[in-house]
Length: 282
Image (cartoon, rainbow, N blue to C red):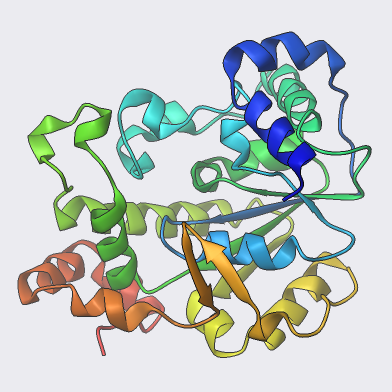
């Protein structure tokens, strides 16, 4: 990331600076809006890192929800990595307020991007809950939905979420695994429900990306109608949440952290959805 991008990212994240700079923004109108959606801990950050290497794609330098005041975040109401518990707060309707809200978002995001990008890439997990709004407000919108084994995802949410930091002392330092499984299930169900009204939606498994990144990335660029990514990305290393690693399936490590009771609980909450994707613990 260049120093100019870092400065731009840092400023737009600050409310006072964003307010001051908003008049300098413009209404972005790229050829494609590309939204990566999916549950927390599903590999969406890795996918964003990969697609941002495309010469015709400009990725926002941070999650889009952190670069505007017009997209609500679950953390704003105390739910870290758990939008399923505040769905009414984060899911935006397609109504008379949609046009001015989306215009404000585009103006804010323009402050974080150079010039007039041909294709803009955005990744915010909470946007999984508002695909119809994004489709209406950001045409033409392309959605890439990443799904990962729900057992591994639930473990990752429990390990990384900080409920006490956001005011939920009743959970201590970790959510119960039941809530984490509920979030995976909510993501799965809402994407399935919204898929009936989304015009451009491509689904990719985390496990398939890890097993054959070249093939998965070709499928994505074909879906987007763009040339293939540069060769060699499948053997590169990436910094994902502060960890430098090559592309590999990390499910085994997550599954090993689950107790038998954890597995039973996740199964109880999400069993039929897990079965639909043939997700298990072996």
